[in-house]
Image 1 (spheres, chains in turn blue, brown):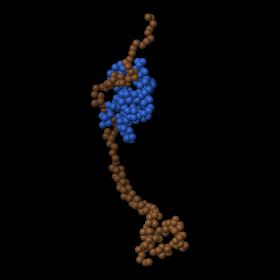
Image 2 (tube, helix red, strand yellow):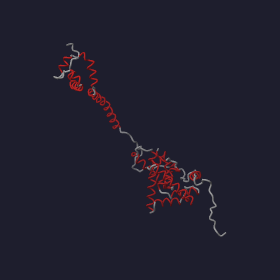
Image 3 (cartoon, helix red, strand yellow):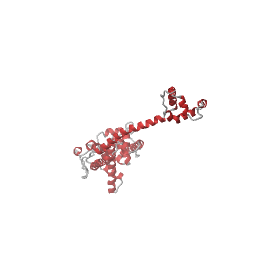
Image 4 (cartoon, one colour):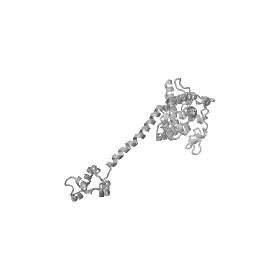
Length: 158
Length: 157
């Protein structure tokens, strides 16, 4: 029931972090397994979806760290590489602006990229993002503001 | 003529950069990322072999029975405890006003000589007693046990 109810939302959240479909598929599987194994520890002090979202986010970020460690590169460089390969990705249908936007996002620090994705694309409220990332609303607003400035800057130079 | 013009000939629509977010949203109304065909229909989670297939969180019957028994025990004992406390509290809270009112209401039933005989020597001076109310109240409070033994309905007079 959890899988059918949440698989799409979690998939798209992870996909925007990892960019690649196959990587997302792996992480989505791991996310549901983690949720299943740790359901007893869910204390109900947040929404179930926020809890699962948090697990998905952590799994995605851990995946990036592990992959970049294996390749001997920084996490930011790993995502940069993935963004530069988007045009060749069969599961990417973005136009020039959309491709540029993904490349701009890849240059952002991890937190800013997460906040921008969740606020701009997933249209979550700051309070919901705060519950998922366990960061104050004020700090999230600041992250989002800095992210938009950097994205505009990147796109104007692109 | 050989100089390269430095003026930028390109313009942007009014407020283009200020409205940047909205413009991008319109351009990217669909998701840029796609999935293999029927991916979500065929998506299945492969659980580890040692994981239980059907995980049901159930409250053990023994815990439930114990909880019910504990609740019944409390329901029985709490009223008993409250009653005992109430009785002693009533006596403790017996105010001087209440006692005075009681004595006044029953004074015709008391045998004054009997009352006087219970008082220690030297305390039958009414002026002394009247002028020192706290002493009277203190004395009555101490002697309340004796008054309770007086036959209030005695016909002897």
